[in-house]
Length: 608
Image 1: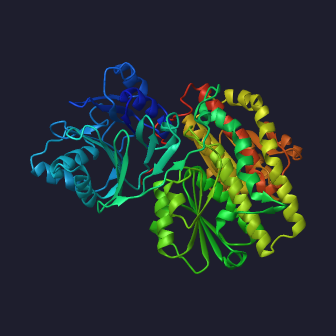
Image 2: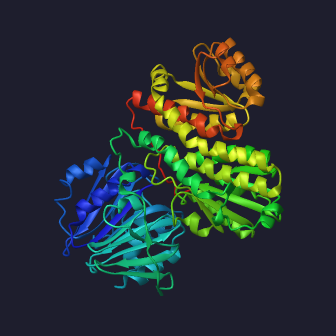
Image 3: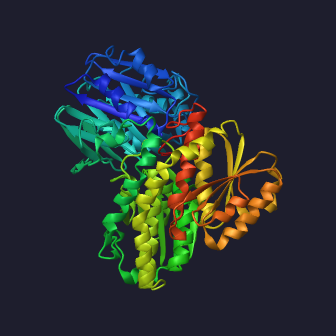
């Protein structure tokens, strides 16, 4: 949510800021702005709408000369999208400018205090409070001023700040909202995420909670909240810069669907060695694995859906009780952390606010934690006891595809490893399942090569208003993700139901022509789900079935069938989700929507 970019160096800042913000569009935004210092004054331009509006207003940045500046793409939380509410925000005389990601939870209290001191507010944002607080406490020392407001703000924030009487410096600080610093021979950068700076540098520093950084064109100085100088080491980002570009594809989402085969291989293959699963980053001995008595899997959105699948896999193979929790609910229900509990936090960005809070709740109770994340050096990666990376590379489209697929692989590997160590599956079954895992990348590619079949079907349902997804067991977990993919990028009302629950109320919504997507990949549940298909068909539904190649019986009851290759029933999500991703994608583009940046959504949800 929101994006920050800052630059100080030898080059003109405004074009670099606009370019960096364009690389963060996937985070979601409704307005944008940049502020540039010429050394004599700070000039600012803001605009509601897409970044192109701002680019046109500034003629590609040429109307704002200067080699130091900060920029922002805003996702509205306090106040509607407008030029006034857009960032950056200024103090009363325009000598201090700030951009902010996050939410200041006590901003009303702070605002009232400032109003009593005579400060006037132009916007409805919590960020303008920060600008005026900086003004109120400013004593000529930026670091001292910043620490003063840090002690008074509650909530989450990443800030980029410029002071007019320190024209050769940018300051940045973070608390529970992501921020990195990039270092290069041509200047230094701040950014919310690595894609904004990959064009200019691969050397980045991850700013930790309550750390401050002062940037000049040729130096970086880091401080803690006590204003003590810190020593930090840079991390080299090894992402291919082309991975953050479309590479000839019409949309990032389509490109990332095609990258799933490679991403799955990259996550899987380094952990398969000599017929065994080796997860060195797990940091657990075999004795510790045997002692585990309960697992919590905690996540949001699509990552939560992988957890629903993982519950079936862990319980079926390793025979460990698993609870899957939405991170936004987890810490508020006062979960019971018994001895030998293991908590797995799943997040693509590693910065998801609710998931990070859930991790901290678990750690406060002394239980073992593991983060499954995609972004190296992210908050969850740093704070979990151990981290298992998914090697999906940068994912730009808001609707996840390849990150989801790699999270599934990580969870499969963990479940199989635990099952083998605990002796709940024999060596022959283990070896057979490893071989089936190895086939998944090629099978994913095969499904994508037949995308036109799904496209033709999707084109028939561009005007539909309601869709239901049904399945049992792992098929229900698959249905959850298929439904989310459709609704988030096509804006069609869609719901997923455990098929056996239809008769407990939901079937009343089935009428003539209603599209029902039925997922049938679990052999033990085929016949029961076919009975559910017959129930909705009797009431006029049109049924699209996603099933395995050997289950041709479904053709007798479904109107349209999509077949996936044969694999172990525990792994079918990795294949069945592909046509569902394609279905959502083609419905969205058929309706002429912005598939990569759906309305009201952000890629990384860094506020509660």
